[in-house]
Image (tube, rainbow, N blue to C red; front, side):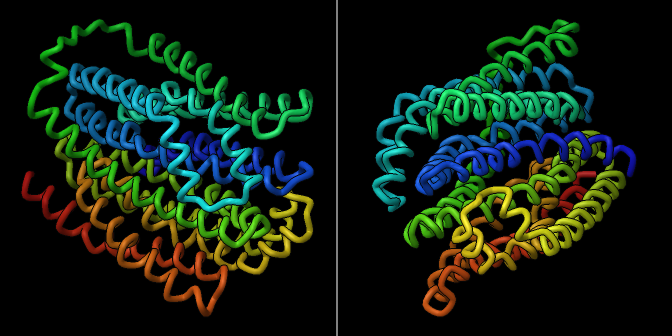
Length: 436
């Protein structure tokens, strides 16, 4: 089991780390340009697209759990039905984003009270990158399907290709062609479509050899549709809460001025890097737990959960120690502006403790997704967001300044871990034993 966890987790760790590293390179590239507001525009633009795109994150997460269960039950036909169904949802979602692109940016900039310069360059970034929606949502669906099929290698190849190409294009557009935020946007747009081409090639080379006929009646089968939309509804609500928290964080940082916005943006990039590393084991948990639920093998499911949890906590400890030793050096990679670095160091302690604290809820997320017990995930996120994150920020803000944002974010992650642990007995172990 340990070997199988690592076979799934290591490719996911490699591909996951490449995601925030792309954001890190973008931040470092823009952070070394003349004006701080370029970095602010990338931060605000990224948050807007986090809301827009990761609102559809269920296309990846929900797909993995459902496909893994069908794979565990050895129902290959159902895995292909799920793929077609989720791709149709992805294309419909993309069409909605493109039709609503103008009100989306206007509402977003109304909510985020950024400086005029940040707002100006955010619009430039947004108007280009929004056309990557069809490719981005399709990649969510395809990568989720591969993971459900116990194939972590293809998502790794696709993600690394996407991010290396994106980095190369960004560097070329910014430093060779003299562009700024528009160069970063074009890099994201072009690389996402080329990654879809690669994903199709990989699928055709491996999974299209056995021809299975999928009819329209398969796609609209009532019980399967109910499960599909129930799981994805819960994940959608959970994801909106998560993105709201990050968006609230960035909007509150913007209110403090461009220097605080730049500092918190860099710290948040480092936060993402540690999160995506641990998420490799969360993805392994999704694949394995889903497989064993589909096969009705409770003993192996339980074993997979605790092995993934142990590895996740181990990586969390390593991340905390690494950030404790190299915090200032890491900040210097992102920007050469002493004021931004010193401002970030004021609150760096919250970055240092994050990997260890956050690892628990990340692994539980993977477990619940694999088991498609998504109602508990939704409830946990609602509790953490509404009862803790926002109230903690406003209660602490008068006494702690910018520390209040990080205290709120840390409490948010702690409560997620605590509630998911408390829910596990009823929502995972007892429920599955009853089915067995």
